[in-house]
Length: 110
Image 1 (cartoon, helix red, strand yellow):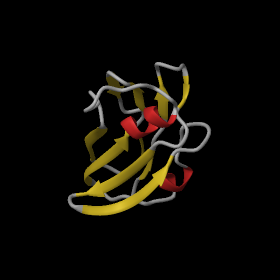
Image 2 (cartoon, helix red, strand yellow; image 1 turned 90 degrees about the horizontal axis):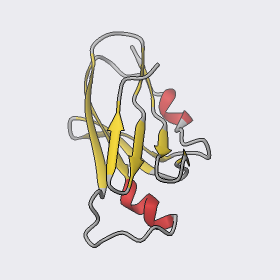
Image 3 (cartoon, one colour; image 1 turned 135 degrees about the vertical axis):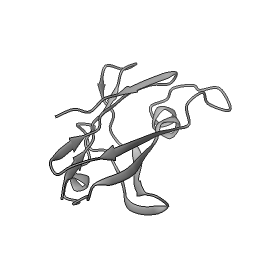
Image 4 (tube, one colour; image 1 turned 180 degrees about the horizontal axis):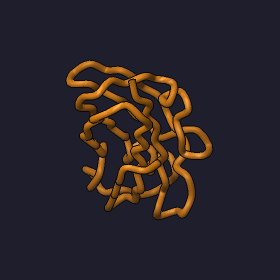
């Protein structure tokens, strides 16, 4: 089994993104739902054992930016950011999200 973690960074504000709602799916099955902590992390997610397979993390970024007082267009350019990724082997997978109201990036971290 593998472990999984994430870290959300608000690149517009230059700080960790606290209180970002996120969900983890395997296919259509919801495995986890939570929010990021003050450091932009979701420690409870790391405790979830995941097998090799395909997964999807969904981050509610428009809700986060609105809660920060950011004025967004309607509809927002980015509402939810969905990251589809695969876990191929045992080990730790870190899937960070760097996000602003108009862009995002990710990578496999350590």
